[in-house]
Image (cartoon, rainbow, N blue to C red; front, side, top):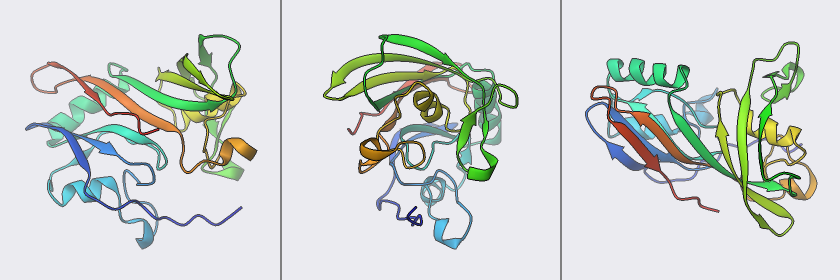
Length: 216
């Protein structure tokens, strides 16, 4: 396997929404949400945002290779409230992915427990004994040649959940450097995008919906 070299895309983050309590941004594929280990992985989305908004606080993360909508808090109170919304599954997330092949059904739910694959970290794996519960709803949007475009709605929020669940179905997400093999891996990026996020404004309770156009 080729040694990983972190080469994040340049440019200021695109901000989709900003108020006194929260900041919603669009994360590009290839940029860490938070710093990784080592000085070479210090450049990340939260660091770039803090250059303009020093008070930015982490609420959730997107994988390095995943793009799309991500929310940050601007006060400790908002951070706690948003964190609780995610923890209690009161947020709604919709991802778009390109997967290899064509599922037999048009929609369904993957219900397979996940845990870290310790000898092969950061990979995760399905494990009915040690795994934590994980559910993903999926729906085919259309066929694209040998592949399928699908909408994914994670019920839980486990690490690499969507990627491992699609792999377990026999339809890995295209361009996945960890889980796809052969032709399915030969894409310029992971074909997974956080298209929509719905949540409540922490202080007013207003229902908010944020969207980011799919770049593939």
